[in-house]
Image 1 (tube, helix red, strand yellow):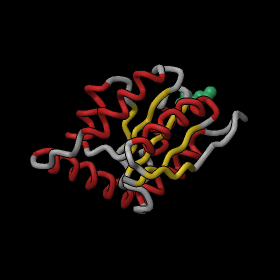
Image 2: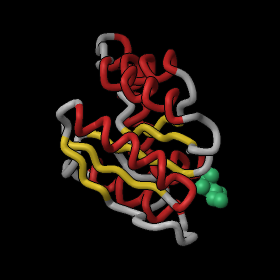
Image 3: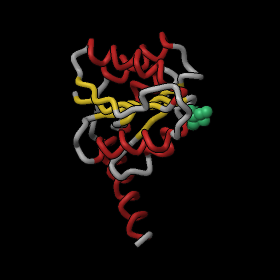
Length: 152
Ligand code: RB5
């Protein structure tokens, strides 16, 4: 798969660790920044990664900040993005199987590198189950469409 990845200053080290794992597992990685330790705004990188997924330039996204929360809130504003902030492997597997989540968000200040790698592996090893879950995801998509119409 093609992954777009991003982080803020608080997620720089974990992003590098996870990018290496993605490449080891045969995925392509497009790193949309940030590239250094200078303080920056997570929403900028969430937007870049979310738009890459939404526009089909990437199949999935990976975002890391201090908690993963700011990244997930921002990424979920982009149509077609289903971002999940994760801190356990059960949820990582389940959100791929049930929600067809397409952007994985992690907090470098929350999970250690070992757990983050396990979460990434669980995410990569799972796939969307469709069926009743497709109906539910379709309702999320419809909600998104109606919310954007009500803003017109
Ligand atoms: C940066 O200090 C921190 O606020 C950010 O990385 C993230 O945790 C926000 O959700």
